Image (cartoon, rainbow, N blue to C red; front, top):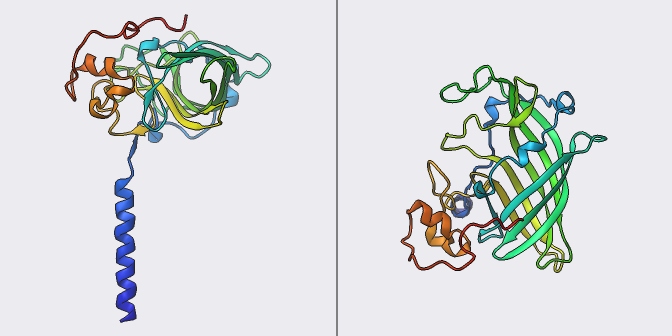
Length: 268
């Protein structure tokens, strides 16, 4: 009888654990490159004399998407400049701006490269348009900390980890790797971390990236060929323009947009 009770308890525990696991949202787009196509060796010392700063200022801001908080409120991020520290070549000084709703903040901080890995085989693009133009390419892993201006409203600090894809071209220049840009799964510059308020020290998830948002619940980004947002859950969180442009998901009433709805150069 006791053996049966133990089995019964064990079975119930398995059911509970299964229900708990089922209830958890799976995270998608956690890595910009599959681990099986990159070498494990850290080539940081080999590449410390190259300047990677252009990786974070190349993409048009209209293709940089981000979320802040558990409800995935939209955040806009614009890195205005990244400058290599010549005394510490793996360190970069960064300046930029953030915008949530109508609130804009300036920020400054650092990106520090921790690891540089090369691909096992070069990828020259679908039509091999990069053939002969690439000497090496791979993955950069770093950590960052950015501080918004304390004198501005609703300001705080960002911190987390960063993944970027890079190319060493035939001119010995480090460039942004867009060799597989037309791929449905392409995204780059995955910033994954948190934002913490100066005022009340509340911490919120804050992730952004080029062409996709990294490390988010899989039901958020419903796009296949390109980024798109689940209209039913997130239309009111700053994603209306993305939803309307894709014309899928929940039917959204098209009315005259507010004055600040149209895309503007808000960072200037």
